[in-house]
Length: 220
Image (cartoon, rainbow, N blue to C red; front, side, top):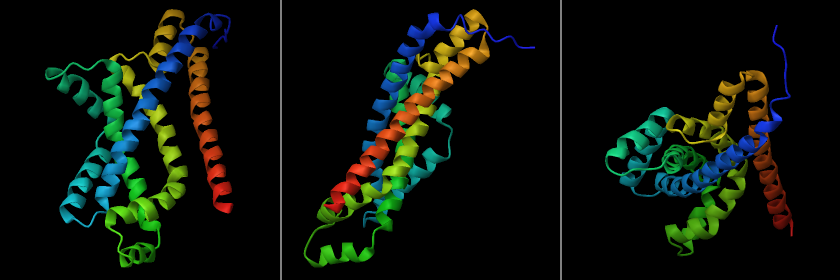
């Protein structure tokens, strides 16, 4: 029968908290990179140009149908022959290009949910496609896609655990190292799970705060 022993865990709190900070760091940079690239790809998905839509579609379908682990290995070991990337930035690049495909699809779905008459009315007034996107469609779309984007970003935080495969000292890798030292798997990994929950739930709460702020602004 498993004997629960929590007395050894507190001494490793500094290590766990530092690892949580590194998890937050790689997740934050990946959210920024994935969002920026995802917006570009998402806009290409709805452009009038068929070539642009095709290229963006190939990118999205490729990224969505290969494992993140494969992308991580390709970036870290494959690009390593060309440019040496430290584990942090190999993880950021991998997570960004992977998550961008999902952000692009969320953005495309959000744009297509806006009534077509709004875009047609803007064009009838002489606005270009870029002006229509910037001033009419994108502001409405971002309000609509905030909840699914938050869900995707929460998934990204959890996906960042794969960065341990290239020796980035995030939560899961530190958890495994501590468990190898004290052999208390339940205590160690329950603590790690709690820290992941705090990070993900904190992001969800912040998203809800933004949603309420946008709703209050719309009501004014």
